[in-house]
Image 1 (cartoon, rainbow, N blue to C red):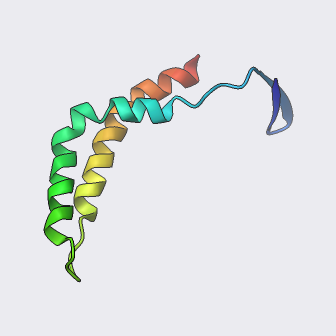
Image 2 (tube, helix red, strand yellow; image 1 turned 90 degrees about the horizontal axis):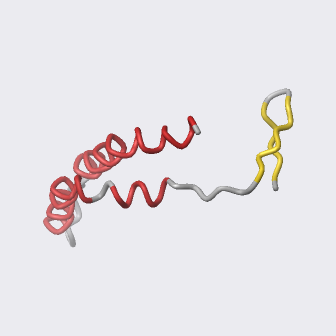
Length: 79
């Protein structure tokens, strides 16, 4: 059992709950695999070079994962 300070109140949180985010994000990899492959292809192209980056592809991948996982994560907060 844990307590958490929430503004002006101390809230009894009950049992510790495992964070579902890592598993949800892992599950959201499948619908985003094409975007991830574009990131991997970019990373392979620039490997060993002194210039270039794959920031755009990396952010595109995480945008896809975030979009997929947002509703699932929000469902946990509504209880």
